[in-house]
Length: 105
Image: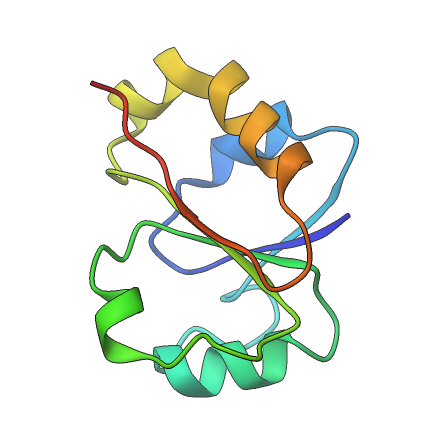
């Protein structure tokens, strides 16, 4: 699966998604793109957008999108690194156009 990390997702997480191709928005020169524009360009090359933007579902119309969106509950690496297996499992379960918000509680 081709996975795009938006700018707020900690890069060390990519080491736990070894069965996927992972790029970051800043690496691609997309760091300045806002969510709507990022979704539009990402959809051309990626299967999944991984973000920690809790407001994405309220700011963007996700219906009819081909790209899946997985929202992390935080971008704090000290928290995320304790849940890397859950994150990797959630990534693997995502299907085209799906949306999911992870919750670690």
